[in-house]
Amino acid sequence: MTLANGPDSLVWWDWVARNGDQIWLRTVQHVQLTLVAVGIGLAISLALAVVALRWRAAYGPITWLAGVVYSIPSVALFAFLVPVTGLGFVTAEIGLVSYTLLILVRNIVAGVDAVPHDVRDAADGMGFRRAQRLAVVDLRLATPTIIAGIRIAAVTIIGLVTVTALVGTGGYGVFILDGLSRNFTTPIVVGATLSIALAVVVDLALLGVQRLLTPWRRAHERAGRRRVTAT
Image (cartoon, rainbow, N blue to C red; front, side):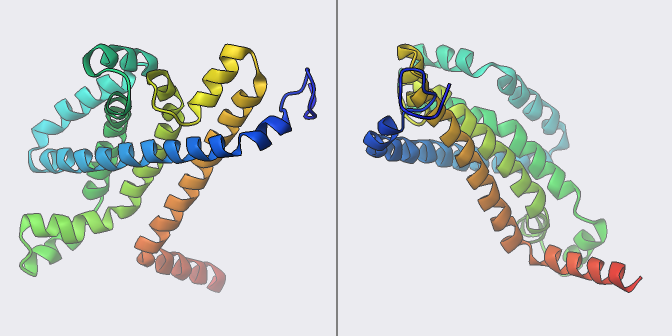
């Protein structure tokens, strides 16, 4: 196979040029589906994590249930939802959000648990109530771990959004389905390549957000480098 136009070409570049508007439309749809899923998943996971941190006995059942859902193959989950919620955006988002919960709940709880006890004691000594300490101190210091979970969840969802084309929601999966139905490799390659590129861009963007929100880590890294240089 070659990259030039022709019956044996892997990519027909004239098809890419003629479908620029469609590529942009599917990109917007893919990003919207991802943002909504990760945003709702983060909100639900924060609530579940707070419950698990307040009542430790709840952590096991919460993660067990989230793990059961996470283990269901995506096509099977969407097929199960369609008779209940029909084709479209709602069905896609229910499935996508479900796949974020295990990752995010675990990372939020792990991040909060990793906050040093002396920091918590100092916050308590300053008069912080438990809820205030969680919001102002614990979650703040847990930011690197939480964003690491968001990065994993976002990349996972970007991949799964390609499957939601099966329930009629758009995104890059539309190109892949179109190519498979016509035995035409160009839209398949375009859909797969753009999905991978989007995942890389989003992951790097979230890494940048993490660095902006955790300036103390950069200061700590610089101090560590200075110590290594001094020795």
